[in-house]
Length: 267
Figure 1: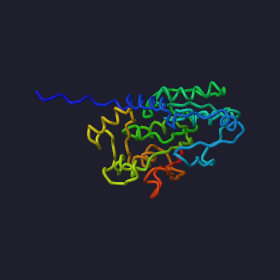
Figure 2 (figure 1 turned 90 degrees about the vertical axis):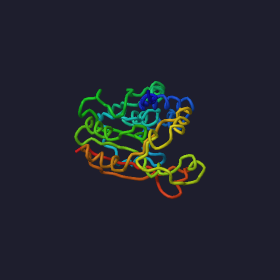
Figure 3 (figure 1 turned 180 degrees about the horizontal axis):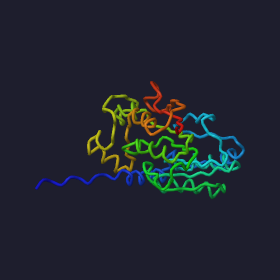
Figure 4 (figure 1 turned 45 degrees about the vertical axis):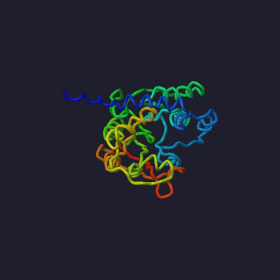
């Protein structure tokens, strides 16, 4: 009999645990905002990011009056609490939706500490079936869709749960980042290694993938710009804003910006 193949990897389950571990290790994307940041947001002095460095342009946000806001795949106690504080006086409500229980606990920690009107929901960013059509006025989706193998369901579900005229703010990676050998890039050497689109499930050898997984690092996927941008348009969204951002310290930063932020409006 032929040898049995390895069972398929449950990416959602695995990456949920990987981000729980990232919380335990103190990743910068798991560190919640402090009380001073929340207090400043309540005074109207605030900003948040979709990508590593550049704040979202203030003019990209719709009015917060009685707005329903979804922070999509945005756990970690960073964007959600700031939006809850900024919109509190206007009657806005915020839901933080994420795949990692520990990341969601970060948001609850801040909500308890600062008495914020914030709700958390655990789930897969590609499946928002617990929300009715046309529920939200604003969705904030920071750079996180690299952790799912298929991004178009994310755009379809986001468009479905947005109200007509609602706004989706998204951050994602330019797939050019995944052309290079990551280990060498970490040492400052850029060597083209991979074809695009990239997948930790198929673009590297099983032995190398096992090393990542033994270290409990999240599995990543480099989606094409067609899937990232045309995917939004085909879901019924109109792109109304665009910027690029970099990440100082990464080898590619010297040559190009690797991250993209988009504003899209539901038609």
